[in-house]
Structures are given as C-alpha cells and as structure tokens.
Amino acid sequence: MTDGFAGKVVLVNAAAGAGIGGALVRKLLAEGASVAISDISGKRLDRFATELRAEFGDDRVLARAGDAGDEADVEALFAAVEEWAGRLDVLINSVGLNQLDPWPNLPVDRWNLVLTASLTAHYLHARAAWPLLQRSSSPAIVNISSLASESPAPFGEVAYAAAKAGVLGLTRALATEGAPSGIRVNAVVPGLIWNERLTAGVAPEYVDAYRSKRLLGRDGEPDEVADVILFLASEAGRNVTGQAIKVGA
Image 1 (cartoon, rainbow, N blue to C red):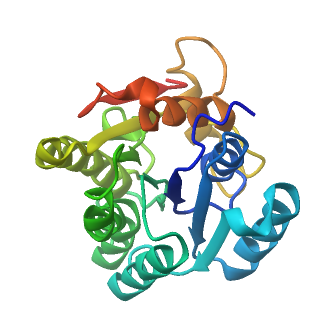
Image 2 (tube, rainbow, N blue to C red):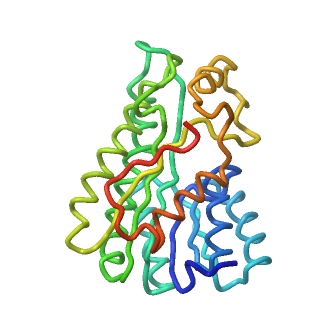
Image 3 (cartoon, rainbow, N blue to C red):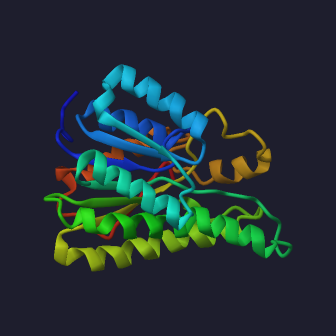
C-alpha cells in the first residue's frame, strides 16, 4: 500500500464485475482511498462489497445498487455519497454496454439502450458529481471510452462506437468546463481487455477483429487499465486534462 489516495473519496460505477471497474476499486482501496461503488446488479454488488469490507474495513466502502442511466438513481447515489463522506474527489465512469446489432437492422430501442448506458450515464454522473468536485482540492473525472470509438469492428458496433466516441467529446468539453474550478477530466481508451467473460456470447470473429489490431500482440489486463486510471486521477496527473489515453490498443 502506497497510500497515494489516502484521505480521498472516489466513486466508481459499474464496479462489481470481473473487469476494469472491480480491479480499479481494489487498487484504490489499497492506495488508501474510501470508495463508493455502484452497479446495476444488487446481488453482485453486495457480494463484492462484503469481500472488500472484510479486506479493507467497513468504513471505507459504500455500496449502492442502481441504474447508471436513470437520473433518479444517479441523484440518489450522490446524495448517499455526500451523506456518507461529505465530499467527493474523484469520479470514475466505468459504465458501458455493447449490444451487437447488425446494421442496418439496428432497432431504435437498442440504439437508445446502448447510448443511455454508454454515454448518457457518463453525463448524468458527471453532472451530479460536479458540485461535490468543485469543493475538492484535487478533483478529477476519468471516463472509460473504447477503441471502438475510432476503430469499430464490422460486427454491429454502430451504437457502441457512436456512444464511446461521444464519451471522448464529452471528456474534452467537460475538461474545458472544469478548468476554472480545477476539475481535470480525462478518458482512457481500452482495446481488447481480457476477463473471464470476454468470449461468452460473443462471436470469435469479433474478438479476432480486435486482436488483429494489437500493436504489442497481446490482450490487455484490467489491472493495466486501472493503473492508467490511477495516474490520471492522482496528483501525478495534476497537469493532465482533456486527454484520451489508449491502453491495450
């Protein structure tokens, strides 16, 4: 433990899975942060929170289930964070949803589903976090985009690619809006990041399409993305804003 985040309060959404969000939460707690976690799956979130509290202490973890794309759920989450900690220093927008639908047969309801989970959710969390971040001495937001934003696979990623490209535009706009208050806003752009559910329900040719783009010839790991997020959210990244950093691409 390096306690690089000691005394800081961080919120990570989509935090209870096997991928980037879960890896990041463990690293933040090991670095001394108090961490609020949210996820749409209450059961999965409760299991993860129980593990974290056993390892890091009850008082350093707040868990709240909810829909990251629902305005009322997001507002309730931030009210709970303020009641719990009285502050917020860092927001990590890890939430996203990729539903592969062949073009041009993409139904508008599926388009809206992906846009809500992968872009609107980032906007809702940033908006709700803003008043708390303005009171922090070292405020930061890190959004997670995707390599699909600039190089989508030809397997029905139209909605996801559009949403994740929107995350990059949102990041740059929020960096401009946040500069007068010292709120830094950056994005991480993962390529193919391995977790045990990577190939479940996804066509092998989809995975192969992303693997063919890797410059370093291997899949990325959730911990590797988490390390870059930690840099962007920490004092080490105090003069970095409006940037999009690729990992595993």
